[in-house]
Length: 88
Image 1 (cartoon, rainbow, N blue to C red):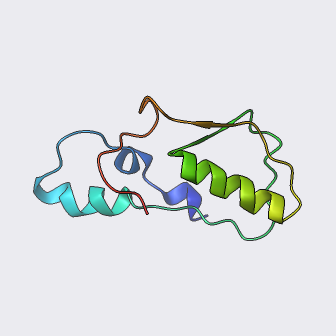
Image 2: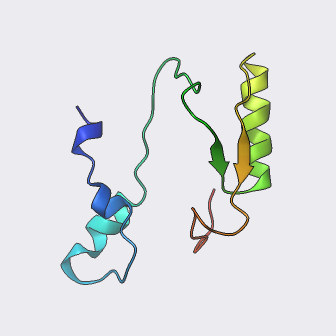
C-alpha cells in the first residue's frame, strides 16, 4: 500500500536540511495523499485550516457537494502550520 510506504519522519522533518538527505527531505515535504471516491469526515472532531481563505474554500466545496460542514478552525497562532513559505 502506497500510504504505508510514506516516510513521515522526512515528511514532517523540522530542522536544518543539508547534505545527502536534502533532496529526499524536500521532496518528502511535498507529499500528498489523494483519496478517490467518498471519504467520510464524520470521525474528524475538527479540521484545522492554514488560512481563512482555505477555510472558506473548504466550506464552499463541501456545501456545493451537499455535504455537512464539520467544525472548522483557522491556525492563527501557527501552532500546526509553520508558515515558512507560500502555500498554493
